[in-house]
Amino acid sequence: MSLAGLGRAAGVAGCALALTGCGKSPSRQECNALLDHYVELLVQSDRPDTSAAELHKLQSQARDKAKDDAEFGECSKRVSRHALQCAMDAPNADLLEQCLL
Image 1 (cartoon, rainbow, N blue to C red):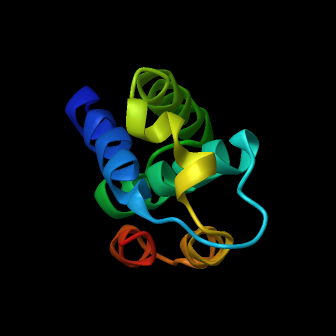
Image 2 (image 1 turned 120 degrees about the vertical axis):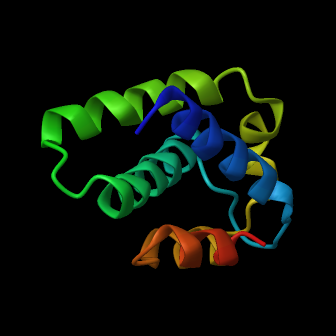
């Protein structure tokens, strides 16, 4: 995954965070786990032979980019518990994105 792809991951995650919901808000750690899961799904789709070390590096880069994304910073306030669970259960990036729409 290129840096542009990481930007896309952070941007899509940030844009998808426009939902509000009831129940306990996701924690910062859960929001980071959501981003990690999204990057993992993108990598599985785009580069299935990526090593675990490379995946970890890409996830770390995506988290670094997300730190500068104002919308991603609002994840805990904007993502419902239901949307988070749906996204974390998603088997691919397209379904994850649909959970957050």
